[in-house]
Length: 382
Ligand SMILES: *Cc1c(COP(=O)(O)O)cnc(C)c1O
Image 1 (tube, protein in one colour):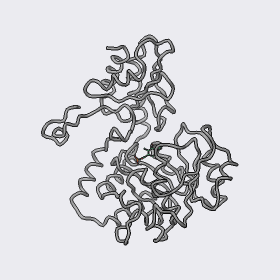
Image 2 (tube, protein in one colour):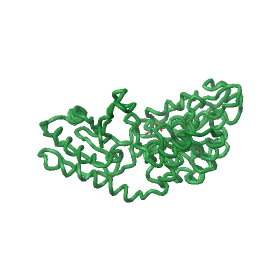
Image 3 (cartoon, helix red, strand yellow):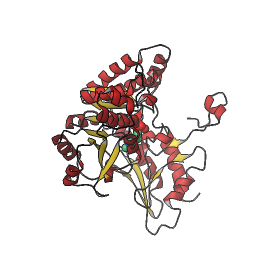
Image 4 (cartoon, protein in one colour):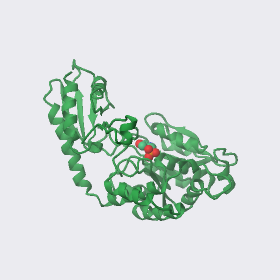
């Protein structure tokens, strides 16, 4: 592993240096590393002309098979899939409506969402022109609040599947929305793995599910996928794939190129066949290696945690909790100290005060040892 890109490479000429990502499949740090098979598949498709529509239809058929949905398609990230969720629920396949977005005059344009699930990415729904109607408070919402919020203008109910969010369960939201004939759209961006989530939400009855392709699936970072009910998928497709129409739809600036479509399908094939248990065990042992290195430091507790720490799959994570009477560096200072030397190492802090964590999911071979040594030095102020 070399952390300096030579002058002979583009990165070297640009002067962009490598970093170590102990912060999970985080987009701003490059997401995940694509397996070599994915890179090869992308290179293979790069040297030829293909009909992009045919390619994404066939890719969508594969995605539909592995998710159990009526239809699927490759999108430009989960966030673009969310734009298409909103657009599909507002326009259907009406060409004049599709041509008018984000102006929603004459359309149902409200998307109901629990306040406890509001997040950075729900602006994707607004990009399509939808208005978010918030229900409940920080601790969640009630069934009665959801029922009262659904009206003549409701295009969809949005749900965000992140383990640390609370509120009405997905089952209950589906039940209430479907009783009123309103579709449920789900943001499940970072919920793969576990591999079972490929089919879980579709089988629960969610109408449109959005996933990231460039996080745990390890496809191209800018890919995602949208799957769901046939009529709504037709509507999403018309909003995205408008190459031959007079007006480009709202999804046109979020195009996906042939290399990315092929890369995502290859990544999904590998993901479906992967030995997820072995991978989980490797994450556990990388976490344990880091924990073992720092746990003897007086005044802190270090352990391997499996569950909710960050927005990820609840996979094994090295967690360090400083005692209340800890007199050394704060977790934020430790985090900053890890960035000073070459290569900079990114770790997470929170959600509780005095908590710091290293997620092993995006660490490359052998990096756990470098992280362990640098974390010890940062904690002890060296
Ligand atoms: C990462 C993420 C997104 C955006 O996914 P992209 O594939 O990067 O577009 C949306 N919602 C949540 C909860 C996420 O974690």
